[in-house]
Each structure stands twice: as structure tokens, then as C-alpha cells.
Image (cartoon, rainbow, N blue to C red):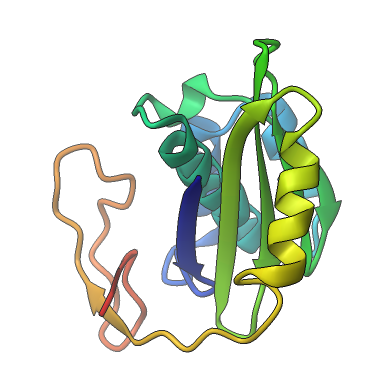
Length: 163
């Protein structure tokens, strides 16, 4: 299982053209097309990246974000992200947009069982009731971090830590 939590305001300090460049670098063409069809391109990019992070955690391995391709299903408040790998183990994620955050939950399970497992988790797990988290904002200066720009004073930063 993999879980990722992102602030809805992630990348809010970037210009629309900077968010497009970020998407061009980290998302596959079909993922960018899904983002373009959503009401907020920036928030859709955050959803896809959050789902990818949850999927990598479910796989128990790391990799380059652009290497993983997700077929995005749904829009707005929630939906599914299905890994395109035809292996016998399917990786699938679901996401839900809350008031201030995006929660992505992923599982790796035998083909056909992943959606059923996620559906049960959605009905009884973290999606079934409100979650209270305390977030602190940090500046991620690690090599390769996708947001190299300095945020404006008072603007949200790219990284979050859960306390």
C-alpha cells in the first residue's frame, strides 16, 4: 500500500507557464491531456504527481516519475489512476480532494483485485471519515527537486511535512 498527501495549493506560487513546463518534464502526454481537461490544470498536475508517488510507495521501489504512466479516470473531487504496466500485479490508486489537501491511496494486487481492495478501503478507511493533519511548510532544496524557484513572501512552498 502507498499513501501520499499533498496540499491543494502546491505550486500555487508558480506562474501557469512554469506549471506547464513542470508538467512537460514530469508527466506523460496522456497525463498532461487529462490535466488540460480538468478545471484547474495546476491542481490536476498535483493530483497526478500525488498518485504517482502513492503508486511508487505501493510498489516498494523508486523510479523516475516520467517512467510511470497512469491512466487517469475521473475528475474533480475524486477518481482512479490505473498503472499501465500489463504485469500480473496491477497497481492502482484512488484520490480524493478535500478542503485543503489531496489524498492518494495506492495498492499493488493481483490483476482485477486492486480496484475491489481500494473500494473497500475507500468505504472503511481514510476516505470514509475526515482526517485532521497538522502540516508544516518547508523549502525543498534537494537535488532534482522540480521546483527550483524561490517562493514569494507569504506564498506556499512546494514541500510539506506531516507532524
